[in-house]
Length: 446
Image (cartoon, rainbow, N blue to C red; front, side, top):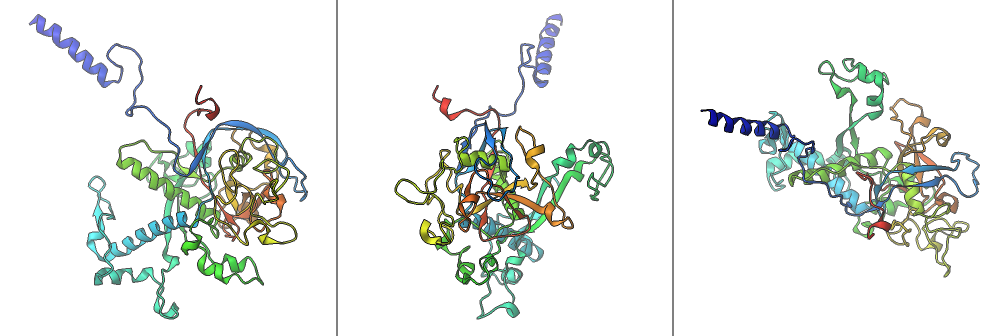
């Protein structure tokens, strides 16, 4: 009996140690449910190594804006799209939302498009069933997806873009970082005075913000932005026609660009989850500091992404799509926008960081931000509400566009547009934060 006890006790002790994650030798070895982490570069993106640079205008401030005093800042590593988001890429977002909206209409009338979660008991949309447009019941339910008879002409029942609303959520980290908000989680009013439902004491749902936004681009910007100019052909064709597949997306607001990044994140991570892989960080709009660092391509104090100070190469060919001379729009090879990757990339392998379309950044515009922003990953954001003054809704745009003079193409030039407006000359590209220190590509082989 004594021998049996001597045998059982060590086995029990080993089992207890293993269950507590302490290893089998009594040493602190750490625990992880995953077998390491190998970073990958997302498709269509380039890796930008952490570093420091002189941010701000390094050339004449011809607009006398005095809004970008040069200062040295440091940034963490990140990934960035090598081109602006194109029409065909954004159409993937539109088609995905269209499919979800169609299924939500079908779920109201056709039971097979509903599924119940066994764990939560909640009813959700069933994506495993194919939509059958020849089915009379389904066709009837889907009528709301299309323009109604009284709004049609020549009997064209096209997709009604007004129903393409995307619901998503984001965490208000600024509010969550406010100690007063964290100390009073039982309250249903956050630090901004906004009421949000709280289910119980110490519930953190007050920091989760729900957004519902129509995601279809404004195709009429080609007409509204240029009064007295015949651009109806662009309004009718630019977004959907395959001739413009690889042209940069325009006509989207800052809010729509943010919604696209939420959808892109879910698209990637839903696939990663299905494989049992770790999720990747969220796609997002770049801060203006990240954008400028990427645009410079490692060339310190250069006015343009390709260096400087000229806008043509030694053969006299334009290096970007902009408004040269006195309005000779075709002198650079394009009348409006041009295909992405038309001009040579900068030293980070990024195309059209100057010209073609200006690009939204995540940063809220303040002419004095360089005075108070941190020197470490500088960023300034403000979550503007609908009833805020217009100046609180300004977001920084960078890079200049096909209709801009060279000054706006400079790496350090700041401009802005209002977050709820869309233009025929503003698009965007996405970034993703890099997890860890990162490996300098120049030292990778050492």
